[in-house]
Length: 73
Ligand code: FES
Image (cartoon, rainbow, N blue to C red; front, side, top):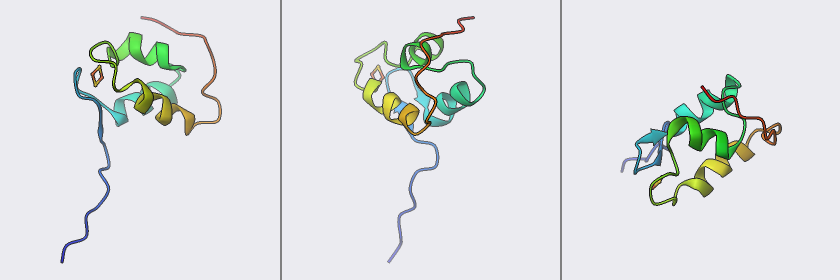
């Protein structure tokens, strides 16, 4: 019997091929501190929008994920 390991870097946005690691990197480096910023900078959530809740859940794992400031490039 094999034990399934949890995916270390799951695909958050299947439409735009954005992985959880990219979202976490954007947040942890201060490049994108909110869901709208993540959407703007990665394109995630601009397709079917099914991933917006998944992105939000990732950001909720950080206590400081409330800043409305978006540092667009
Ligand atoms: S899964 Fe992200 S826009 Fe469709």
